Image 1 (tube, helix red, strand yellow):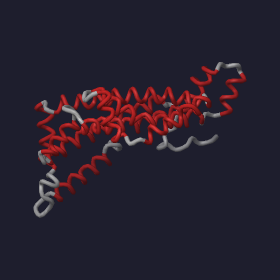
Image 2 (spheres, rainbow, N blue to C red; image 1 turned 135 degrees about the vertical axis):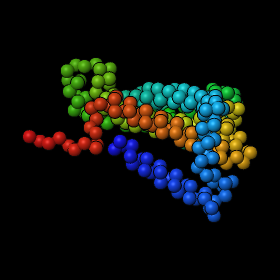
Image 3 (cartoon, helix red, strand yellow; image 1 turned 120 degrees about the vertical axis):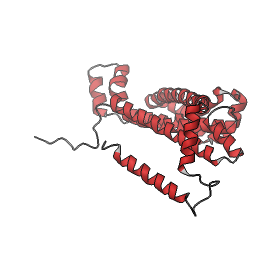
Image 4 (cartoon, one colour; image 1 turned 30 degrees about the horizontal axis):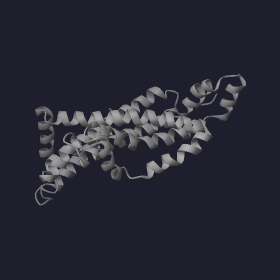
Length: 257
């Protein structure tokens, strides 16, 4: 309850300010709809089943692209961190790809992979790839040099040193990159649906924009916000489980003696 209470207070304040802004003398409904019509649109879409096929399409593109982009980023990041030769040959081009605006690449990706799920997955994988790549490289190269040298002094193989010394040292950075990547993955899926799609929550928001249905637009945006919060919470929970040796910053440091 101590963790839930502050966000709930903030939520109540936001809803109160929202209701006040749309009350008598406030903003017109075509600019900012009141909270209750938006809540009813979300309820009707979820209970009536209209949201679920589109939400399922968006989640499939998001999770599939996130998985492909994350695994690729960790593998490539490990190669770059462990091999200076590989870094010199490949890393400049990875930076060049990251520098390209993904929104500008979206039409080209659609031409190559079509208007279905594949193009959204590719776009999501590209968007969430680079943050995790950088975190992986930084984490592996930031491993304790004394631990690395100690493992080598006991004639441990390079694979053992990587798996038992360097990879655990990089785990906090990798998990932080995953937390950033899951949010970027959702953004990538929505961008792909905005560009060209006949399914997905982004498609629903685009259709509502054409029809000037601001209530439906807000409903879609709030559903996406809830999905993003849930994904971030899951990654944080995995972070606590996977990096179990990392100290909790909310706890006081252990006393000496």
